[in-house]
Image 1 (tube, helix red, strand yellow):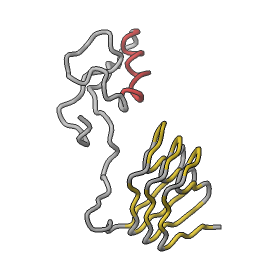
Image 2 (cartoon, helix red, strand yellow):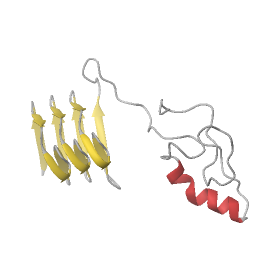
Image 3 (cartoon, one colour):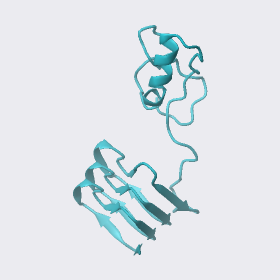
Image 4 (cartoon, one colour):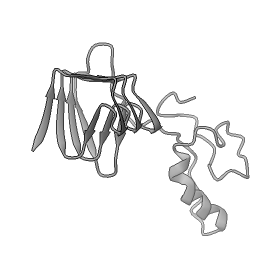
Length: 150
């Protein structure tokens, strides 16, 4: 079945995963607010299934590991039906660090760069000033970035 949450204020809760709400199946969240919750991952909402949100906010939630407001597990999906509430927005892209491409050769440095590429997208400190540190497995950042992470 589908769990429907409408007109809810879910706040001041604590859990290991999903401080405010944990979605393992399918859920809809409409005209609701999830705030001031905490968890290891997914302080506001932890999704390993499917979540559809409309006219709802996730704010001021905390996570000790990842996903302060929203954590998306492997294979999960979350859809936000626009418009967002006044004064809020939904980012159009994932906030990650864009870097120069790795060499496609078969040498050790190229293989190490490709192996580290995924983790480097979330690394906000390693080789981000474009000085091309040779000891770094992360390539220098590109000039354009999808969001203001610096």
